Image (tube, rainbow, N blue to C red; front, side, top):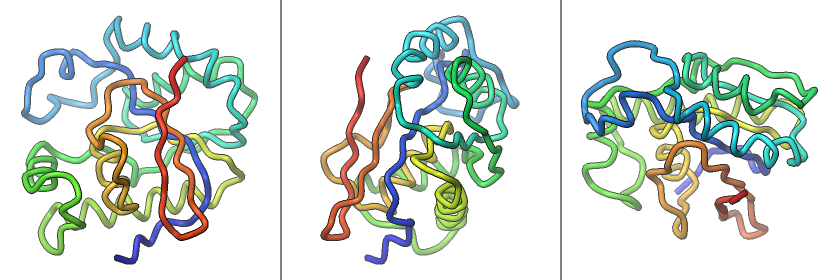
Length: 182
């Protein structure tokens, strides 16, 4: 499969917890919602680790929860940040459509899930045009789509809040994703 993601290493973090995440509600977010107290604490806990990464640019979803996570994570960093609209989260309907066939099923070929996947590919590639390594702060659906595009095998696609992941291209064209724990 043509993965179509620029072959540059980068870091990814899903935003901190929201009340919606905590409720385990499988429906759409009620609005562009902020982090809850635990989400702010999660971001604060990994801030020292993020500050130690060799990040040159931070690319962020324009949604509140991602921007708030960015503000906490980069408080000591003097790196530029860019909001990228194509890094916005998908709807619950699209999430279900993408994940119903499970991991490793490949990129959906039609429908809203395919449109979302294409948007994610474009958003990630836009982020990777900036000076790197880049840190991308976005959403669970973005992470899932990214792993799908890259054909990631030894890494869970449904990632928890505020877990830093290092994506590393390999010489053979494959990718490795490694969680970085504080």
